[in-house]
Every structure is written in structure tokens, then in C-alpha cells.
Length: 111
Length: 502
Image (tube, rainbow over all chains, first blue to last red; front, side, top):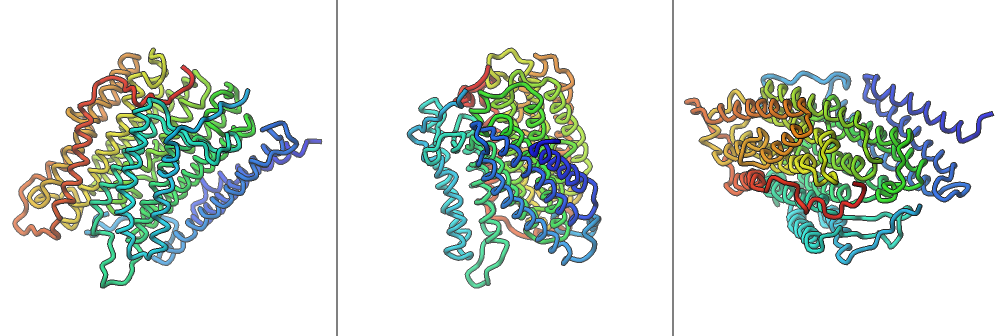
């Protein structure tokens, strides 16, 4: 039997791997945002593992990483909100969100 | 071993003021009405500059770092703020650049009393203040998790600045910037989790005492530095930078190029010289330098090929950032007793400061030129000299620093890096510095050549530029030139408060 710490550690590794794969290889921005959330979840579980190992003072469980995870979740939530808002604006502006359109050579505005 | 306890110094409360002041400004904008955004920013900017100068004076007078322990809670549970010589140098730099940008942006982001409230002025000024808060936190914080929060605050303030005008290309550039930055922060956070798991503290001074040279530490630091590389746009992770910095309004580009990309590099410096067990990994140092060389050469050539002025300057930013990463092997190989007494380290820091001044000036000058001519195509810049001569002069003076020609801060910085490279027999680095200078000269002169050409007969000026805006830009460029008169040796001021391993 593997201990729960190892199991959570492996879970974290798996989530990070899936998230990284999606973030690097998926062309669609929305999928990238979802992949970022998976990657984030993996990292938060990693903090949980650190908490359970009680690294700080040799306690049974360490509360500090949990405070960090809560902050991290808020930050990841905000990041997701900004990304989705940008995506919505991009969809409203028309066309596909996938490929960057070539700059218009006749465009006179400073880029 | 218990981590070193911090003792709060007398003027320590000023550090909190430096971080909180921009936030108060942001809140005041929301509370007093968006219409007053510009006026509130003009109130906060000079006060912030004075605070930064006061902290710098305190550090210079006492010859030691200024420290503040938040709430009196000692690390590892609490968080310490600490301003050493390097931090205050960058804080003053940030305040100076932001004040100059604020002056030049005057008028472009204001709400006239007879018009309805618009989004972009309010967003511009709040985000500039948000950036300032984040940058000061990055420079002062002694806790890796606090630094993560500061980096995220920086990203969330910087990304919307890129797409202020809401055009489709800028939205795409902003989204790409955000995704790169998010990968960077998650990698950084993962490294922080590993370090916490290994040592039970994220306090920099505590980690410096505890850090062992083992696999977990190397992997953690590797992940963090890789994440920060994406945020600092080191080749090949620079792809997001040129469209993002070129698409933003000129005032925002100046801040993004001059200051925002320097923050992750500053954290790399902290990790490398303050946390990593010494001696650092020679292979990692060489790799960072090789990526820096690739940045210099590849992006200088790309800058040469651009048709648009702002895109050219953005590529030049990536190239100039490459120089910063050359310092790691140079410092390792030097025989100075401490890192900050070596010529390579001083050269790198000076490059950071002089590039910030020169690039802010260059982007602002490009913005004024584009405003006067109504476009920024390099091919059609002829006549710029007759309309905005001071801006073109500022562009040229800032260019001196990028090329590394005397007298300029860039010249001294590159000469120091070159000296360190030849002293330590890093010939590839020396060659890259020289070649990068030639390429920079080519792209700067290409622009000056066109700008000084006689205007076409049907030439028309689109807008007249007030003199004070041009003079502010020139002032920044002159600051970059004046840096060229510093003595060619390590500065004691930059080493203040940098305790640690030899």
C-alpha cells in the first residue's frame, strides 16, 4: 500500500502533467484557460502534501500551506476571470479566436 | 537551525507607505469618482517619488538595509519587508520613470468636464498605480509567496494596459501575454511549494541559512527560474512580448518595457544570489547566458526587419534584456570576494537601470512621433525632425545607451560586462556583446536616418505636441546619458544590506 501523502503527490503530478500538456499544445484559448486551472489544482494539492508532511515544526499538520492555497485559489480565480473576459471581448470583435490575424498593411494607425 | 530574526529599523514604516500609497490612490479613484482619476494620480506620483527618495536617503545614511516586520510577526509565520541598496535603487528608478510617463501621458488619458466618463482614462491611471504597488512589493518583499502575489498583481495590472484601445490585435496580444504569464506563475508557485515542503519556510533569509545542495532544491529553483524566464521574456519564451508592448499605448509600453519585465528578473537575481546554495550550478549559469546571447542576436536581427517603429523598439527590449542574463557565468567565474563586488554583477545592474531609462524615453519619443505624424511606419518617418525635433533627439540619445556608445549608461554597463567576459575568458559572451552593439546601432540609425530626411512636399503635421511633453522625454534620455559618467567600478551602495554567502 502506498501512503496517502504519496498518493496525493502522484495526483498532483498527474494534474500538473495534464494541465501542462493542455496549456502548451491545445490551440484553443478556452481550453488553455481550463488547462491552466488543472495545472493550478495540481500545484495546490502539492501544497496540501507539504502541509500533511508537517514540514514546518514537525507538527501533525501544518496550517500555513493551506492559507497559501486559499490565496492561490483566489489569484487563480481572478486570472481565469481576466482571461475569460479577454476571450469574450475577442469573440465580440468577430472572427476566430484561434489564429492571430495578419496585420492590415493599409492600417495607418500606430500599432 | 532557526532562521535569522529580523529587527525592524527606525524608518521601516516608510516601506509600508511605499506599498500602500498607490493602493490608497486606486481606492480614492473609485471613491471620489472616475473623472478625477488623472488628478489623483498626479497627487500620488510625486508623493511616491518623495517616499522612495526618503527610503534611499535612509539606506545611504545608515549604510544598512531598512527592515520592517509586518505586525511584529517574525518569519517563517510573518512576512518581512526589507530595502537594501539594490531595492531602493530600483524603487527610485520606478518612481522616476512613472512620474515622467505620467507627465507625458497628460492629456491623452484625461476626462474633459463636458464629456461623459470614459473607460480608458480611468483604467490607465488605476492600473499605473496598481503596477507601482506591485513593483514596490516585488522590490521589498522577503517572502517567496508574497513575491508570487506581487507578481500576479503585476500581471493583472499589465495585461489590461496592453489592450487599452480594444483593437482585435491588441486583445490577442493581451491574451497571449496573460497565458505566458500564467504558465510562469504556476511554475514559480510549484517551486515555492517544493521549497516549503523541503524547508518549512519561504522567507529568503531563512532559506539562505537552510538551503542544501540537493535534488529538491535544484528542481524547485529550476522551476521558479523557468517560470520567471517566461515572464521576463528570455528567448525562446519572448514570443508574447513584441506584439504586447507594441500594441499598448506609448505611455503604457514605456512602463511595460522599462519596468514590468525587470521585476521577474529582479526575483531571479534574488533566488540566484540570495537563496541558491553556493557555489551555484555552473551549467545552469552557462545555459542562462546562452539563452541571453540568443535573445541578443535573434531579436536584434528581428528588430532590424520591422516596418513599424514600436515593434522595432519592442524587439530591441527583448535583445537588451538578454544582456542581463549574461551576468550569471561572469559573476561565478570572477574572483571578487562577493558577487556584488564583481564587475559583472555591477554591469548587469547598471544595464538594467540604464535600459529602463533609455527604453522608457524611446517608447515615449516614438509615441510623440506617431502622434505628430499620424503613423509609425519607419519608411515614412521623413519630416519627423522638422515637427518634433526634441523627441527625435531624445530617441537618438536613448539609442546611444542601447548601442553602448559613450557617453551613456549603456556604454558603461556593456563595457563592464565586456571587461568581466574577457577577464573570465568567456569569449562567446564578449563576441555577443560586441555584435549586439553593432546590430543595435544598425536599427537605431535606420530610424534616425529616415527621421532626419527632408519631408515630402505634401507633408502635413497631424497634431502639435506641447513642449513640456517633449522635454520630459528628453529628460529621461539625458538621465540615461548621465549614468555614463559613473566610475567604472563596483558601487558600494548597491552592496548595502546584501548579507549572505561569499
